[in-house]
Image 1: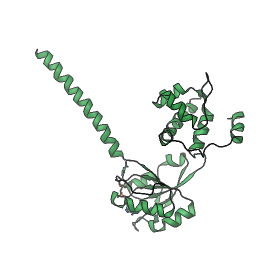
Image 2 (image 1 turned 60 degrees about the vertical axis):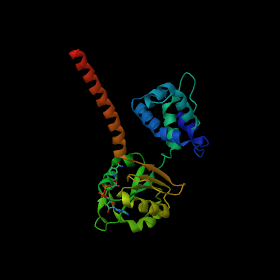
Image 3 (image 1 turned 120 degrees about the vertical axis):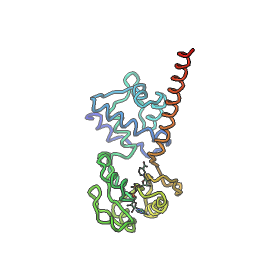
Image 4 (image 1 turned 180 degrees about the vertical axis):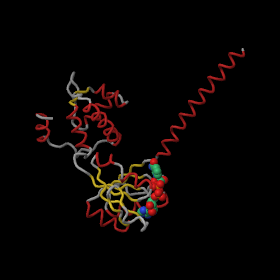
Length: 238
Ligand code: NAI
């Protein structure tokens, strides 16, 4: 991004403008596609091409990108590097975010050791647990602290995102503690709905729920197969 990056730096950021949540959710998808295109040395992309790659319609893609102040050039499309920059800027990914993991069990350890977080700018600043036997152990290069120290850790390390990896019955109290400590965004892995103030952003990850949706489609597929086999054998008999 030579000449273009110069113009980027003098631009007035448009990132404080609110973007509808549905569009925000699609931005990381575009980001991943644009990263792949960059790796393939692709420098331009049309909204039609991006729409196909993202499984969206082109009008929606154009609308989403317009929230970034990006309208592309007719007949040329979008500059991949610039669009990548704009999305990263909008998502706040041009800086790193310290995160705290609450719960140093199986999941908390797996997340803490997952290199993909730091690659994307999410630094595990702390891991906390209520079990004193776990305090002092090392997860992802970080020494596990006691959950009671959470407020101090959040303040001293400037943490703004918390990950909940505790059993379901403890998730609400862990979330309340995160909020009291000053956390504004929570990624909840526990299979429970959290009741939190409306200004707290919560995203939920539920692998079992996703598998249940897939099991529906597998059931439909196997029902269709059974129907085909039955009608085939009926036609043989006939
Ligand atoms: P685990 O039992 O191995 O670990 C839980 C940890 O949380 C323990 O170290 C425990 O001492 C700690 N803990 C309990 N209460 C606490 C509190 N109030 N504050 C701080 N730490 C506390 O459990 P595992 O397997 O790691 O699962 C953790 C959670 O993640 C569960 O709710 C589980 O259902 C969920 N999970 C979700 C997945 C997903 O796809 N969303 C996948 C796997 C697990």
